[in-house]
Length: 506
Image 1 (cartoon, one colour):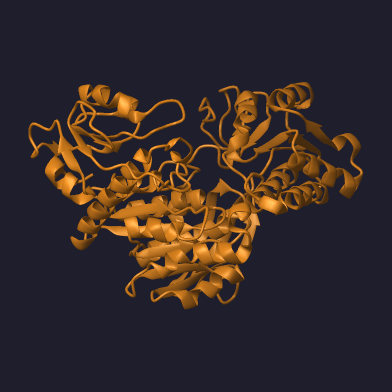
Image 2 (image 1 turned 135 degrees about the vertical axis):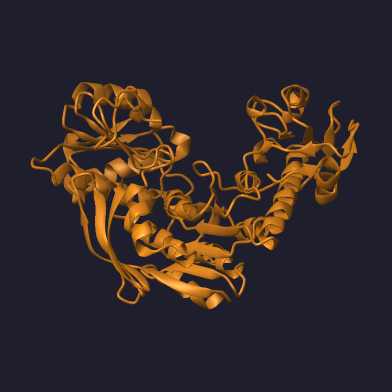
């Protein structure tokens, strides 16, 4: 964060100073909501949580070096205090369930106002370009690729993992300093208006829309409503900005009419301005292709896994080229970009020769389909056919379509000829996935429904053999990464890792 005095911060967020002996004391570090991570010069956010209220940790945060606390009530140490907002619960954020008095909403609103002021100050100075990315799936992978291709051009700030809601979005934006050239942000939504609100906090100059799928269908009600909300990103772009749209998704391509910005299309369609041809996958489901642009073409070989990464890479390439990168630099950066966020197509091979595909951070129908296709590619493009396992759990937030979507995934596993499907859970959606597989192929024991993670681990321990490939994927709430962590046991190495490497799955 840029250096600001407590007086300035109070003016920006509409707060008052309490227990502040020197209003000119400056925040010289960052903004932190976890008291265990507070450092010298930081501003601590007092947010209510599931087990504790951040206000109770204010004194400890100041003792550990925080200059002050951003709070909804006086806390006995230097603080910028904003008024609680009863009844104005912040939708989609981590504090929703616990914000009984509106203190969380007040602090989040203040955080957003502070981030907006910092970003606009940096952008006005001409030192910062904000890049926003949204879509039903692939946001985090694309964010990581964007950071990789922009880094040769200057300092990049991007969120860790999927830190993309009204807490993570401004928290990430406030990591930008006068030395930051690119701020790459994910924009997520659980309802109309959410992306527009995030774009107001950190106005993007470049917006990337990847796809319109069925993630959060339960909240939105229809794909059309999802498309309308995703398009809020391109509507927020200035006339001098750039919209990067997926030409392979008709609902995304149609967003060109909703923006005043210049449009660049990407995809495998012949009409795309930035496109891929001759796409092929190696034995680890890593794609190679020819990247075509108006300025020429170049071969690209990705280090990340899954054919779906081609579209993500094209979007990243379009942004980098817009920002001044040349084709060779883009190709080299894409080729060197490994998965940077935990539990997303993280491929490791154990000491016993079992390949584990840990894609357990989250799941929706589109991302599960992509992961299953990557699984069978890894199992069958080697010199020998390897046995493929799909350990899948519930995909959340699909609303009335949940049973149908889970049934379809079970049937797809059969059509792709996955050798073993292990469905984890006791609710209707997991049962529908298992039943769909059985009905599609009369698999018998090829599809197994187990009640919980412990049962899944016991089954895999008993039956997985050296050489097998195991995909682990479910919505975050299922916690299925415990299965992947158990299988790797801290001794797995990524494909093509240097000899002797013992890097463990995160």
